[in-house]
Image 1 (cartoon, rainbow, N blue to C red):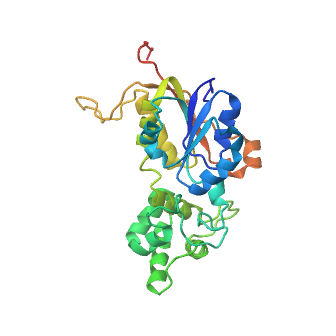
Image 2 (image 1 turned 120 degrees about the vertical axis):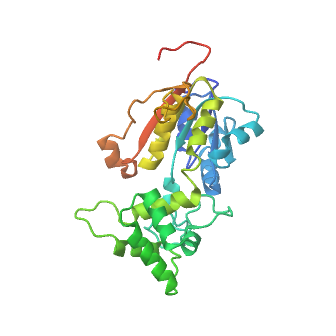
Image 3 (image 1 turned 180 degrees about the vertical axis):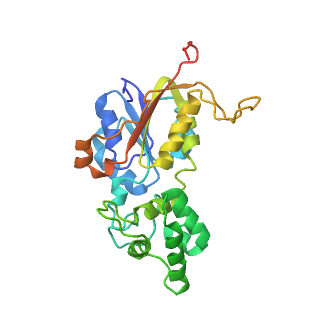
Length: 304
């Protein structure tokens, strides 16, 4: 999707353990990568993995929402491509201390940057009202039984048992959600997803991030985004369409106010999804969707 070129400068917006950064560096021995992650553990782990590429990679401890300002500090005004693999990383899910997974009994933290001054998931559940908790779980997790879950969470904290660990939360969700036959996904999956998204403000920054990236891309430069749930994918799809010239203003508006402009070409009419063999080999890929775009050279004419 990125068509890595010789001498090109690329951005890995979500470094994680460094797999995508390493793949870009290996694709062309004259390409360089600037990789972002707000998790200091990712910077440390990926730094060891990428030690053989030190002259072609820069690791930045920052949220990709700060892409423009961080690149400006580095003196980088334009890039040839960017990849973003959204959501929680496998390294974070597999951590027994970070509280992202119900597989381990751990403090209910869920902050991607544990050194930040943002609230942990436990603090969120201790502060929000029953209605607010239900809304978070429903809006960000699309969980039908959000009200039942919220009711039990508030009842537990009012009885002197605040939800402070992953095991506590997973058990409350299990007791709140009716058991389904042949269930492959743990009943707490949606609730954990919703809290993680809320704690880290993951959806708030996506549209601006895509627009910032397109601003930074050179003409012909490419962007690839991997999403893992419908809320992320909806935002990415709509923003891509808007940048490709689709207007979302209500009919009858005298002029466009949604920011529609034909600045990019969408390279994936439908998202690329993992094959059955890939899903079997890597179950975490089952909900992944890949979309990509190419920035147009506005000095040339393109057919609509």
